[in-house]
Amino acid sequence: MSISTEARSSQLLVGDGSTKTYAFAFKVFDAGTDITIYEATGESSEKVMSSDLYSVTLNEDQEGYPGGSVTFTTAPAADLKFRIVSSIPYLQKTHLMNLGSFSPKTLNEVFDKLCALIQQVRLLADRALVVPYTQDKTPEEVLTEVLEVAATAGEYAQLAQSVYATVEADVAEVKAIKAQIDAMMLTFQTIEALAAQAQANASATNDDKLTCQQILQEIQTVASQSGFSTRTSPTISENETFPLSNLTPSTYIKAGDLVLNTTNGDLYRVTAVTATTATVGAKISNLRGPRGERGLQGSPGPAGERGEAGPMGQSPYATCFGQFQVNGEGMLQLEYVGLAPAEFSINDNGEVEATYANT
Image (cartoon, rainbow, N blue to C red):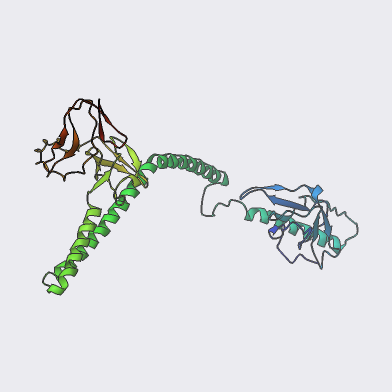
């Protein structure tokens, strides 16, 4: 029977970790020599699988049911790619002798093998580099050019990588500047729209004046965010890099903004801004003025009210006997009782006692 299919290999097969037997459907003549399995080892590389890892069984009727099956000792791992390929030896072992028997079966076998070998060669040719018929170059010349292009491409790739590494920082800076320009364009568009709305309300009635004022306030706010503005920080110093959160306000910060140290009055300019930090340069000026002259002494306040009379004090000398008290003018006075030789003392009640010699 003639060979009715052009296939000389199976489709690309993929293991699942459990299946051991895989079929193929092309005619071969010897299970020991006519089958080779190629195992993928990468995107563009492969290797011949060792024949110790599988066995080949051919269908008994290769004429009616060509092909057979391959049974692995261990199931191919999941995602392992492989292909069963015809590998009939390129040999002619049939020998016809003069005056010998003439068997049509032998001739069919010879022609089948020749057809199979041609199909094997075509399988290789279909996967090879082919020079167009209209080109005068040989395959060797084409291959040389391909290899040269590949080598040059590798050099260009390295050069491109080197150039990219050089301009990577510049690209990031350009992107940051573009983002700032886009933000400013959007800001200007917002200002333009608000200004147009304010102009439309310029001749509004008194009821609409509040709305017009609010629009103008929005314009002022947007303009202050987009233009160079002044920030404050109590701890800023010369040539310092610090978190954006240290500034008040801490949004819409850009190079050129001024930063005032509220502790000592020093003024700086922002020289660089990242997503999280800002950097200032040298001190520009100090906004704190000189100390002013001392003001005049104020007039004394009114005198307080007279306090309560305190207890009578003690005196080491006494020349008379009587009762001491503070009069209405705040003067200490003595109500005179008498004068005679005596010893004076103050008792436990704070009263002056006099002891006469004869009493």
